[in-house]
Amino acid sequence: MSEIYRLAVLKDAPRLLHIIYEAYATIRELELHWPAANADLALIEDNIRHNECYVLEIDGLITATVTLSKNGEIKSITDLPFIKWFAVDPAYQGRGFGGRLLTWVEETVIGERLGASAVTLATAEKHPWLLSMYERRGYERFHAFETDNGDGTMHLLRKAIHPGAL
Image (cartoon, rainbow, N blue to C red; front, side, top):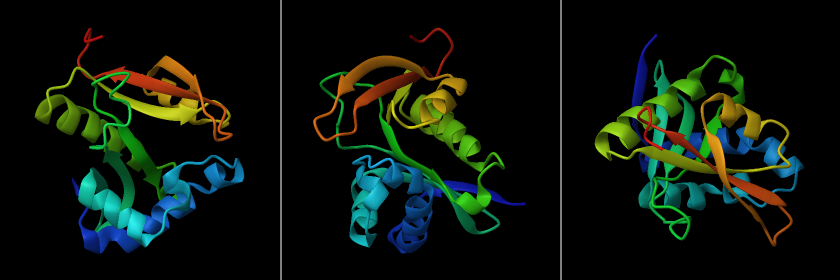
């Protein structure tokens, strides 16, 4: 089995649209207003152009994706790198591909290339399993805020990249 970690390119956009749309079904069912949940091809392409969108290819097929934001969404709260749009093709979930991609981005991109002490992400309290999933991966809640769009309480979480970094 071959594994390739790389930046997405525009020709990957249709496959990423499929993965993100299918993986974000629960987000749509919960009526959370996350851009990725209802993304179209143009938004996926915009994400690839303006952020660092990483993918994991297994035997030549993209199975998972996560984006390192370049938009500064949380700069008023922290200068730590912010990841978003994490998704694993449902046909490949439960095999550890998403975890491997996250670990690679955390360690190789955030820790080694950027030299950052930690990484951040955000999720909704009303999602039935995302908070606990990220907490099992070592993320800790550090900031909660209420949205005005109906999403309820959102949590910013951070994870130390290097032991004792926080």
